[in-house]
Image (cartoon, rainbow, N blue to C red; front, side, top):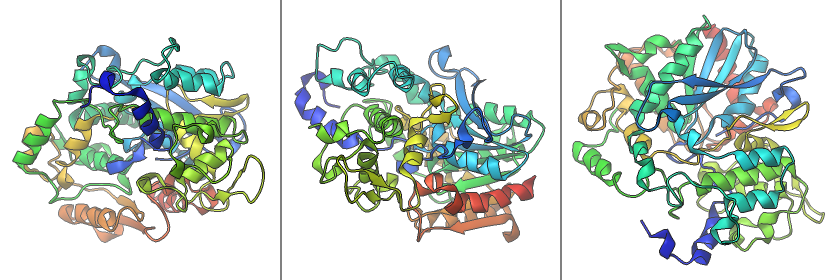
Length: 492
């Protein structure tokens, strides 16, 4: 890891621009994403279902007691007894699912959808973002608070990253143990809360969240599988299959490497693990709050030319251009969506929603801003990205191995061993990113437990959707809603 104090600030600040539109959440390895509703049905008032943020107390784990909790975004009527619990992927946060969650509960009576913000999200600082949503400070002030201070010593009131700039000092060493065992234990507390409503509980996840879903279902809870708590599984372009576990030597080597540097993923290699999440939160927030204003990013020398349109764009157009499948540069394939195109005219140039995902919906899913009766309101400390994603969680996911016991599990403390004992229906949707792995993995998971073909719902969207599209596609065209709602209806 480079010594950040010794690096010329201008050099790595320029590189920072490359992450402006990266999605720390739905992405990589994941990965894992989704958006809030583009209709008024996401507000606390009006005809649509409510959205609530609740805190679930979990067992103490590695680190200070203040991290012994997780936030859950609950969508749908509070008196609904059945719950679909959704787990985000790598570097993703709970609001990523909000738009599609609202679509599901709008179509399905008697159900809530809960999306889980893992304990690492508690390391984030949403204070300035919340003040911007309330109209108390400007976009420039928000930028200065989170990023401007890196190149300007005169900015003294600013964001203090957990673990320092490089997020690698000993104050966050506890996060080196935030792996699959901690995540499953936390998730167990959420599922117990959901089961307490008296109905059925289905567990699902996107990208890495799919791997966590398989891990929970096959986890050993004092001799019984986690699947005993569940009525079904929903794998959204993710999962885990047998035959993919690392060797003992590989697991030991990766575990040793984890002891150096930051305990968090640095997906852009800048030595600032939190930066991708911060940049995406800022970009998506400006798109929601000031969609038609000239983009500050376009005028900034920090943003690489390959992320910029050929003309001055609005905030919405800058965000859309950087993430659309036709104009996004190489390297952002995991977060690309079918968003639309630049308008033919205008100064600044606007954005035209003429594909599957409205740009506002995409921005809302990552910003965590909900359209309420009193304007755009932030969810309580929740957005669609995880600024700090534990490396240990991604490492442990490889040993899940479809719930089939393997030697690497002993090294990593993974207890996903009941993969041949499942007895519940399985839903799986695959996009172009899945490349056959997702549906194949779901079939293998069913075969090793003897789950009949009739209990499988396999949806192949590999010729139409990107990895992130399923959470962002507008309601009328969303195959995830179209196929997952009937699956849930059969369960309850």
